[in-house]
Image 1 (cartoon, helix red, strand yellow):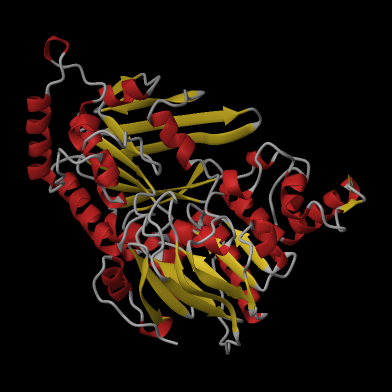
Image 2: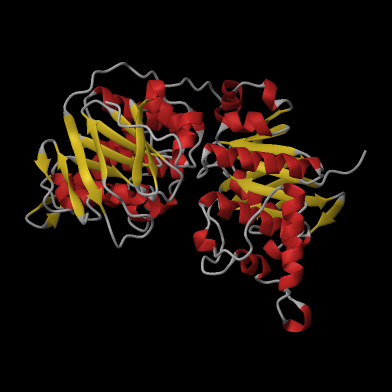
Length: 506
């Protein structure tokens, strides 16, 4: 029997008193797609960072094709045939596809070997079905094409094992199909793949075997993912059953937010082009679309971060005259941004301060220009308890919290003031199934109380589960709107690519 392509034996890694990994064993055979599962904070990222050379293990060893190796950095990992595609791409947008592939690779006589690089790119394209125009600048590529370039880049450098961290988070359904076809082709030709994802249906469809981490240890292994239910996998991850939230039937009321002919200019990303939409009291409107089709501009207009150049917006019947976060907040808008770490919470402040910052000047937290530290701390303690925010206390630095707990803190901050309208971007991206279920329950509770909620996301299963209606964005416009009862992943996927235009359905 041949040796595993990669084997990690007894890997232990601690950060102070916290054991991120404890005696973890993991192996990948040639031609195998291994799923790596676990809640946020379970140790998946730490383990892969050890394998890719970002961290040195405190104990344990790594074997490549049966031989022990020392991996001190990413260059060592690449030399050992280990490539990693991160959630956030590491590409030079102004350079072409071919130039990105050749960065850091010495050519002949000190010159870049463009001909050799082109030949290698053509070979990879033919071998795995990963085609890209070598002369296109990265800035002209779609998100799915940029991810394809990251995969090609790892293969270009001789990867025998590919680590993929949440690779489908920003892809349309058709792009996911293309990615999976390429991964299956790679595995069929002997490459090993480690697939990290919280999307259990995808894990079941793609992987040959799974390793589940919990609290830094191996909690279980799944030898036949396709024959294992998502509920069984979730129980292994969390240590208890995850029951989907119950979505109560409701009758929406009057419109609480209306956009009429909104267009934007001079904004990073795709501008809005004549966007009209509405959300009613007690209704959840999902916004679907491939990343970069105007969702960011839409969220910024609704939250007051960006003033439109044309069109009007009303909240609870009042026309917005001044587009600023403070004005929109005063009209009853709550906002949970996509970027928790920069536009969400101030990571270098204590959690308590960050949770009251948007309302720091109100009577609840200050008097005559002086802050009320006791009131601020009491508010934070109350929310920490109500939302099960796992942290040492209200004075911990906000940036020390995990992604799931940061999202809970943002949710607590906004929902505590009973908004009429809530806009949320990518509410559960990167969150484990337990944290995602908690977030969903809070949205549905607000929905039942009459809040109008707009959820911008790329997880179509999540949008179908939460929404009353789903609008699809394509190139800065609303390509169409469907009642959730009439929507399917296939139909939404077509609309996300510009096909299958559907008129607004009430």
